[in-house]
Length: 193
Image: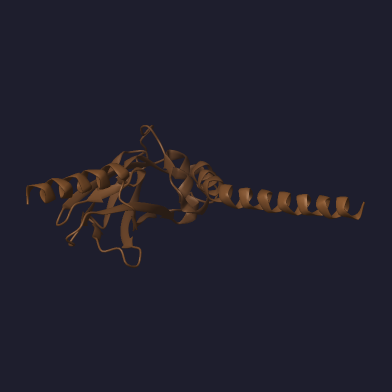
């Protein structure tokens, strides 16, 4: 009888560990989804197109940084622009791979002040996909966006006169198809020699 109680305790403990592990695994994608939907933490929305355009303007500043150890050079092509609220803006960032090897990167982003995050919508962005730069490759990457006109009536965000869009690039593993193509090129060179 005592063994049944111990076995039940073991099953309950394993169940709690599995449940906690599952919750920990799901917390990152859930938090990311929550931030995108609500604009919490300065996370901008993703939109299909801009809507109404107001006569009021807002200044958008652009910032770029890299995770420690990321060998790329990364910078905004413009430091700021003034656009009408609701108008679609287009900005460019430049990335350069000064190394002798291909490097894949992914950009994370946020908006400051945080209150403006729910009203800053990106239509198209290089941050939506991973980027691969070959040795010595330099690219200009666009981001199209608009500031939702509802910002002017929001209790917390209506006094916002500038928004800063920040990106941080970090290195990721090369995509499998890119790595396979590079391996095939190495094999072809080796068979020729």
